Image (tube, rainbow, N blue to C red; front, side, top):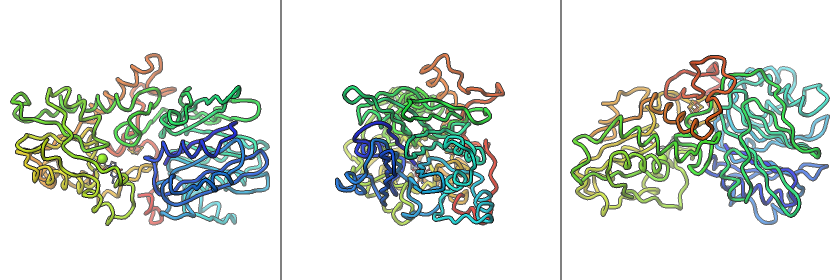
Length: 482
Ligand code: 5GP
Ligand code: SF4
Ligand code: MG
């Protein structure tokens, strides 16, 4: 999911709409905005894309100079308007809206406890427990109630709260999901903006200031901004898959350019898994699977000394296939989305570069497409390690049974996708490449702030390694959490 918030701008709703548009890649199932005029909250939520969800009339009805917004793709709870965010509720102490990116690992235990005490849930989303915990809190201030509520949840959250009078941004103590802040000047005044990725700031003309730190609670109100650190410090566990695939390449995460990281992954991949028979003969081309494979292919071509070619052309009129929840749409999606460019492929030894293999179905179709277009050889290179484990922290990977690398070895996967050779980036290659770019971006910052152990590398890479930094207890009810 993606979140965006703004405090102190007369066009808060319009700017939030634009911010969400820039974060659309983080979720396409539903979009919502809640505004505040200082006295009451006004919500609007809609299924589908941001662009389709808000008419000029809808936006005009969203009054106030502060707002939060959310784009959703479901990791917990089905694709239904009831689960769309931000949630906005009235409770004894006032009104509050919540927009959440991440996944709570102890959601079911908390929900069972709350329901036993009489809470009535309106949605199947894990985020709603936070609202109930806030409503149940007896703390005096809203930030204390939010801190008390979040102190009880575990897992991943980059979260925005909007009350009548304040905007609150919180990143979980391990910092799984990104969250950053910026400033937007308008006339003599200045608005504070927060977003999942700074690419949202570029679109609205705001300046990126810094990332919200893991465990930080940033409060924005009439007195300005202030930060609290209400949680016990933990070792940072930034989701490394944000760098591999999820974030937009023009974003910075903790100061590191996602584009530079992906290029470095491609270079490393070319070193670890070169083209069989070398790339000097002049018949090798490096072809990305657009869009997600492009930066890694640029790096691969650079290191391999072979030309980068657009051998697959992407239609811009379909979205990211994986984000649509239905299998039937996903399968059809490949052909809708990509077509082979024969001029670049015929009689070539083609290296196809992609960021990841999940089920393998897309990759198989692409390899066939490229071969049918006249490629002499097809070598598949993947700029991350085999995806073997589902994510419980906010990325919608399928169950283990559906992950091809969970049940097949390299040779079997290569055979399934019908490639002449298959190479993945090693986990060590991934982590060292990301860390190198991150250190270059902020040389003084340790990769793992407040980390207790020297061995901590600062990243979650559980979907590749199986080393889950926060435990979870799969139960029959947690089917949807997978
Ligand atoms: P596959 O070959 O596994 O069917 O599809 C691989 C493609 O899915 C890659 O191009 C990759 O960009 C995209 N993808 C990346 N992350 C995910 C994810 O979490 N789930 C799914 N289903 N696809 C993803
Ligand atoms: Fe990211 Fe993978 Fe960890 Fe999930 S399991 S948070 S996708 S690195
Ligand atoms: Mg892709």
